[in-house]
Image (cartoon, one colour):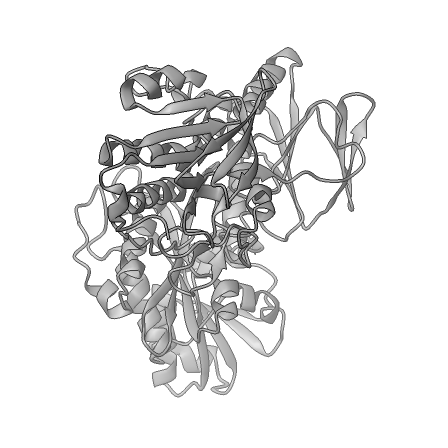
Length: 575
């Protein structure tokens, strides 16, 4: 074996060769140098830039980041280039060098110098693969037209920026509504470019959000003027030399520029050809120490497989934050520490026009795939006390194991999403239950929060649901049931609220204000066997009405999760 606890290396310099000079590779190199002053560390990178911050690229397009050097320089303005890593960190970085083959028996890597054409076999004691990922290309007609970009590598980003000005671009189509697609939709929208987003699946952020949460998040995005073409497959790009339109299986969308953001695939070819194991996710299989099937070879970053901390599933999780954690663990284990990497929760955050979105842990699809008997609830509220300037709506969806009450996942949309998601990351990581969440001593002051944080409220509501005190229905489940004459929506808001805006398309709807429920329910709702769904603004009054009606002998009463604030479908002005 190679790596942890090897006395033979204590008095000799280890040759550590790292393939890939971005997040995982450079984090490994930098951490290793701090831990081991004698190690011979060499990084080979096929491109011309190393250690750049790709996650910020969309904000360069929107001019929030004015200078591209922000991604390639230290906060003090020093370029993170070959000379910097040599002089400051004592690390040899070879740019424009491409690894062609790993010879595990000889413990060498065949490397091509792309400038000189020279091929060299470079020896290693320990090899680290940080080969990253490559954007998926669409194999459809017109894919090679000018004006079509992937927006993944630095030179593509600068090319997009230059073309926007040079061609006076006014119409951009983004293919793919994942993180990059939606971040770019906001960026282009912010600079006055007309944006259309084409997504084959039925929602934005399909890996992050369940359907009703995604549909709720899409409303302010569409209201900002972004054209969402959801559930449409891109079948061709049109144009002579330069792209002029995107053709879907439904329509043709004009475009002077196209960004293809349909995902990335891990770069595993080098590892596969060397006989290293590839995991079920398609990434390089690694153990808890980030070692591959060859203990002298580690892998980290986008090319390496991750274990989900809740489900145990092997997943592809290409995130810069994850890559940096991998690099630290790999460096420590090269030094003999035997540090275990616990895995990921798949946490993500995304800012869009008028909306922030975040998630962590499992969602409906992944929880079901893991065979977990779970329950969930959608709970809206204000992100701080409503009377404070800047107060806005936040909608949480919380998941828990029915039997153990352990929190297994969460989604949030609206305002102040990041701090709720980050708190829930800590909770899930530590195995917290709903009861724990309910009692978390979360900071309270009117500019920041309410006296009961949204997380605690969601935990209490979900506990009520699991234990049968709340009988709620999810918005997406009520979407079709509202049209059924067997159901009556009981809107318990004030007459003024009801007249201003109500849920549309209900076969039966009754406005019975909460303060009238006890005294007038029998005359307003004479059939105590009727199927009733109570709704208000954020579901607090709906829950109260539900309990009142059950106490009055109504047998089939539910409340609508999220009520008006969590309703993503059609609404109308009341009469």
